[in-house]
Length: 243
Length: 249
Image (tube, rainbow over all chains, first blue to last red; front, side):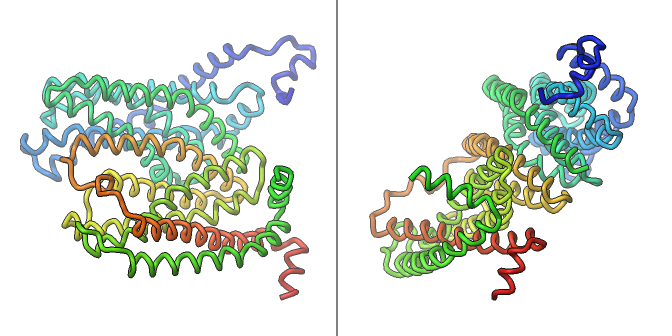
């Protein structure tokens, strides 16, 4: 076994180490406590999301004829940027206080533990974004029939955004000011999600069924869910090796 | 044959052997690049027949298509080098990937620029949100991201591994990006003139194109080897063989 820490207890005769699932549950609980207590990090991206959306009527035009057609794009781009902002500090505190290194040497699989972190983060920052979006949609004169699709597409899309963005967050965890760098790495990878998310809303606005777009969005979520935990784990190992 | 290839592969993993072996390859790449490019350019730009729809302006294809092909295949090569680095810990793979990144970005930029110039006589505008141009632009940003990541991370081994991982993630995403952009384009744009619908080329047109593509690959091999050899010397500057090699010259 190449995982000393996990089996140290056995060697020292202190009983069996906790199983994988127990450790996963403990990681979930730890992330929940940590992230709930960092209230600013959770609220700021939401304020950022609202503020970016508010800039568009001021910058383009406040009239319904101009705002309504661009509303899907504006809401989605603002959501992309807000997600990126919220992910920026996902792994850095753990890297700095050494707990990330302890996770890596514990001998437990890293990918599920990273997934626990991303999942809790999505629950606390992606989900509020979904519930905030209809209010901003109303302010951009988004038609009523598209509100449900807006929430549904953001619900699926924000999951994929969190998962893919976390790869960038893991890779740049060791870089001091990584905000712009991470944006540069991750935004090109977000383009398919943006296309399918806004596509679903455009379809709903003109009265077409948005199912195909949402199904593709769901496929992207599943693909991201199955592949990105491994990439995140690899990225974290690289980041720790640089410390 | 297989044994020879594996031996070569293992030898290329050592900086010293890499430097010596590629030194022997260098003139071959240089000569074939020069010959192929000059034959292809003269043939394509002077002797190939004029396109009956686009006239002489189609001749930019002899730069546009090779650079676009290279832009895409260099990214795949970088991802392969990334796998070699992460799986077999072969440091020379990173030297090659590092040497390729700016060339790939340059090729992407060249494809974009020639595409924009070509757009003026065919579409009447410098830029159009055409599906191919758009995915090429995204590829350009992917290259810039890779270069920026290498600049930002400090110990070289960390930067190498991070870039390798990012290239692999990118190469998984490129087909998804490509198809989503194609789909987005068909949803938003009316059908316009596309390059895929032009009449099949006669051999007198595609032969010089093929030669140009091969010439671009030879040029790629030449320039990557030049850059990689300089990088090897830089990285191994403290070892004895580098000092011996440099003193001999």
